[in-house]
Image 1 (cartoon, rainbow, N blue to C red):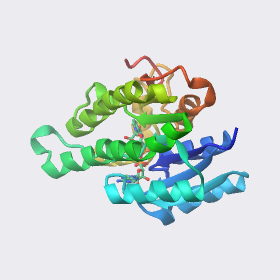
Image 2 (image 1 turned 180 degrees about the vertical axis):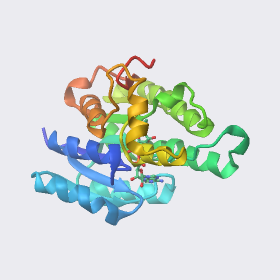
Image 3 (image 1 turned 90 degrees about the vertical axis):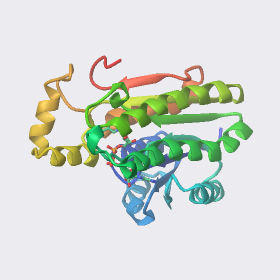
Image 4 (image 1 turned 45 degrees about the vertical axis):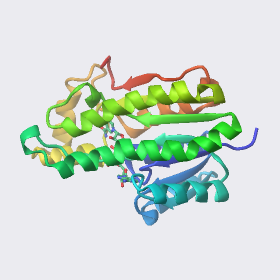
Length: 250
Ligand SMILES: NC(=O)c1ccc[n+]([C@@H]2O[C@H](COP(=O)([O-])OP(=O)(O)OC[C@H]3O[C@@H](n4cnc5c(N)ncnc54)[C@H](O)[C@@H]3O)[C@@H](O)[C@H]2O)c1
């Protein structure tokens, strides 16, 4: 079997960076895609230092033309992408009565439009190869979370999107699954702590009190789950949502 090529969106930092490193360690060539190409250089260098193969790609996942160009470049420079991790994400939290249309649209655009465009563009490579793995990042917020009307709707939407891809693409050897993380220590959760005026360590300690395994999650916890869904052995697992939250969230 030749080396698989994976694209991980939002991979310059946080969960995406950990996923990119893990898939490279699993033997895949990895496109580290994020808004700013230069911001991907560090993750690419880390992968290369460990003997892996990676490419920095700058693209906004919500921009149709940019997505087409990025996927084309990955296919040419790394090989046909048959593994896709839709991880790019933003938060624009606010209570409903204060949420602007711009807050709503921005969140929908990155998570849902982004995952749609990336999946549509890469599926041709997957169906041609008769192999594909799509892993979408949902969230425990899909179950509802105060201050996140936009984000929870987008993350619930990711689950429906995943299940439809599983139905449509299954016969081509392509699986689609979603991972719904709980609290993971990244700049996203650090920003939430800052928004509510809390020190990040205090914020994590408070969150850990509500988590059955008594700790907050790390990006590697999510990368481990992605590694399973993206692997050769997971071909009969499709349309699933795995809560990786230190407890039974759903
Ligand atoms: N951190 C958590 O607790 C948590 C929990 C549940 C789900 N998630 C989800 O996991 C994913 C990663 O989260 P994280 O905590 O690592 O976030 P993060 O903010 O640390 O990283 C997100 C990355 O996505 C990139 N990005 C944003 N918009 C983009 C766009 N339009 N095109 C390309 N890249 C873009 C950012 O530049 C950034 O590098 C997100 O989808 C998030 O919603 C995170």
